[in-house]
Image (cartoon, rainbow, N blue to C red; front, side, top):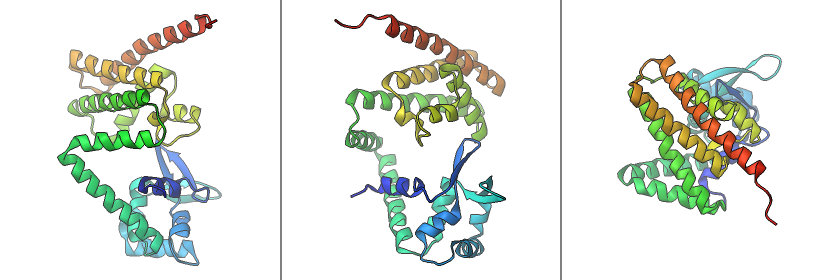
Length: 253
């Protein structure tokens, strides 16, 4: 039996659902989603009716070039809103999932160790090595640290968070988030597909950047970007040294 989490992934990764990455966000065709979830003969007409009944759906749309003319698309938040609006047994199954997630979130707010335990259990169920899981959990802590520093220093806009993250990734690994995702096979969650070493280096880069912010009391966006680039370059040197050592190390007899 699929887990509730996999049900959502199964829907969004269906070959019949067109998607595209716009400004770092993956967006999905609402018409294709309606065709899969709604009990209707004409998905286009049903989508038009849903927009009339739920104006928020229209406000959630972005335009993407999927063919002869721009098509309306929804990000993940918009997809959730669409699922709430569709009256069908398939959509109801997903709404039950959303209810379960909300309940778990409230439980984890009251007891954060529940979230860590559930995350660890989920990775173990995927067959992950315990050493990788430990490093993945440490990487979450490092990410929270740097994001918290950015927020305290005036970064509130999602585009600014994206720019700083890309600057850090590019200076550390030589490619931004989208390029890194592509190198891993266009995976949805990049960090879940990094190696132990990549996770360690990224965590160290984020921790170093946070330290530079605090040392310089950085607040200006350009100065914050300079800090993350400096941190990334420091860790990139370490990465190159590790790679050289691995290549030069003689094979065991």
